Length: 113
Length: 117
Image 1 (spheres, chains in turn orange, cyan):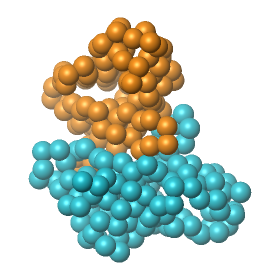
Image 2 (tube, rainbow over the protein chains, first blue to last red; image 1 turned 180 degrees about the vertical axis):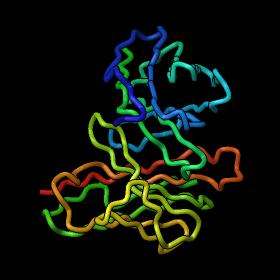
Image 3 (cartoon, rainbow over the protein chains, first blue to last red; image 1 turned 90 degrees about the vertical axis):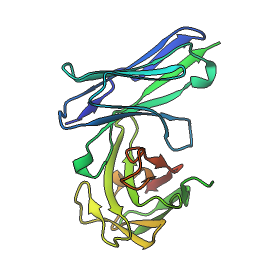
């Protein structure tokens, strides 16, 4: 049973437009959510996070929205740039569980020039 | 400073053999995690250890997977009697001390791709 799901395996967006990556979770014990970005042959790198007590966190071109009632979060990238092309993973964690991350399956974002 | 590094980057092992994967974490980080990443299924945590603990705390208990912490910033994941289903990318991650504001964030190494034949 996957606790974190990213239902879109891939997404293609034109440069300059908004990219919206979605993530759903089932574990109501998660108290923190993170987005990671991964390039081929590299490990995931931290992108942005949000505490479960917030509904939005913004950092430059990246904004994460959390809808706790729907157990849904999304990552918005605007404007999208070709260098954003990568695989994006969302993850949930719980401080009482050693902060182990539970990842979704990832969404491959392709930003076309 | 230096990030998290892992060695080897690629490993081919015959089924039934034991393998050891090394992770060098960021200085000052206290918790080390091992994840297994399979294509399209995200990553599952295998084990993690805090501080200098030599014993691992298994995220998913499995007799064949164990981690040792020979040094504060070094972890070795050992897989006994490898199976073909163990073929995956093994990621090591470390996180700052719990009292730090960014304690939730984990910093990942590049991974070791293990192929069991």
